[in-house]
Image (tube, rainbow, N blue to C red; front, side, top):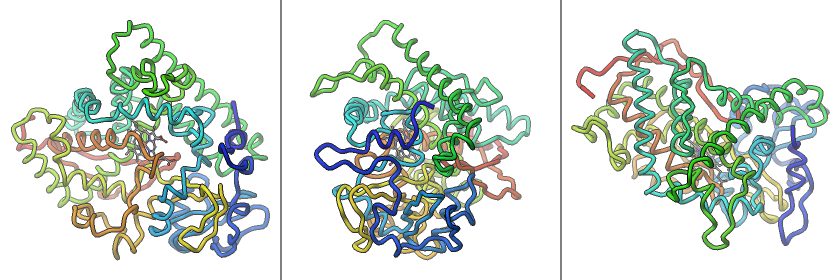
Length: 497
Ligand code: HEM
């Protein structure tokens, strides 16, 4: 492993113009003077911390449980590391105040630094490559760019429906998360980098996906294993992680080399063209070869895993709620009537289907948490003092289930929560599946367009039949994904598309 989490954080902890922040992992004791007022789970064990009720494979779902018993703010300790969690909508909204808080690169995000470095997702706020890459790449997500990706998105979706037609004819259930991952990986690879992983031609996941899942899972495990014990407990896992990272780097280097070998036509067709060709409009600076490698990995990973989960959860809920499914199918049939293929602007017209997606992301935001740090000494919610650099992990799915913001039955799946009147009646900053502020998701429109388009195409073509015995299980590997979700399909009789 090239660089430890603590090492990376230490190296980057300083901000220009202010006194250096403490080096390494910043435990809550240092930053929260009134920490004792914040509850923690019962049965804390000296030296070990809050080990009861903690499962290394499900840290997010453990935290959800703790939030339910401990309230809108609580803390958990594992060995020497103590972390504050924010689960309440009011405190979460306060943390969205960009004048007082910023993204904190810690925990799982910091653990990804060895592979993603100062790529957009893992960059520290003050690293010059964040602003440079942001300014160069943001136009790659504007309306014109998105309209250009639409054709490729349709092509990839056609590969999925070919495969699902075969399954349907054979009377075999489809593996939803597996196929959604194939779809979203192909989509970002083709639209962003002109690369074809051939996912649909393989029965097993592409080795890029296996290596990526390995890296994400390792980053999650590093959160729960204390630094001093990591060399011992994670020796084998760390070796595998090195191999996974080497594979990711090799794959990306091949993609970039292939593009460089093509004669540059000066056209900016995708993200890779932008990375290679575009200079910053004001400073004239360009991304370095090393940084491009980091960005390509970042986009290949960030650009598919979360969207795949979002599509999978949405399909699960659609199959579970026949009334919602029927209403969404009715909308697609009406809005796309007479069109073989929806045009770019037809996708945003599926308003109800978009609410289904939002409601799925409310209950299971597939990037389930984001960390925020105080820019200066402040008080969270007017009651919890924080020193500059102190930070908390915002548990998005609990923010999204706070009855104060979402009413008395927040666990119920109800897409009408997102009709415009209902949205207007809620306070600001209570729906944050894409994070918040300057460091919010750059690919939000891309993800929403892709997911709405694909759901529209699937609902127009198939009826979905879930296994009545299936109980939702959620796998965690920094992101969330339904586990073991399969659906049976039947082609809809009314349509010939
Ligand atoms: C449903 C799908 C998606 C979800 C739920 C999601 C969620 C998020 C969240 C919560 C963040 C902020 C993380 C933080 O504060 O630490 C983020 C950042 C980011 N996302 Fe997404 N994302 C999705 C799809 C995508 C796609 C499709 C792309 C690329 C095409 C993408 C690229 C990124 C990048 C590069 C960042 C870092 C932005 C920055 O810091 O400047 N994401 N995403």
